[in-house]
Image (cartoon, rainbow, N blue to C red; front, side, top):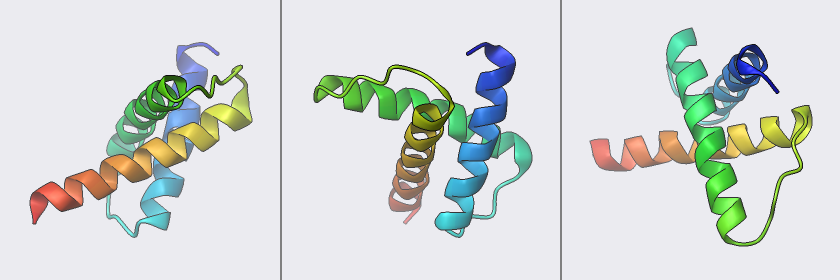
Length: 79
C-alpha cells in the first residue's frame, strides 16, 4: 500500500476509533492517530507473533485498534 492508501486507511481507522471512543477529533488528527495507531498495533502484534500480510482489511483493523489505544492512553495521561 502506498502513501495515499496509508493516509486514506489511516483516516478511516482514526475516524472509526474516534467514534468508538467518543473522542472529538478533527480530520487531520484522525489521519495522524490512524497512521500512528496502525504502526503501533503492527509493532505490538509483530512482537507477540502475529504478522499482518498486508491488505486493506488487516491494515484497517490494526489501525482502529492502535488508534483506540492511543486515544485511551491520551485520556489516561490527561487525567
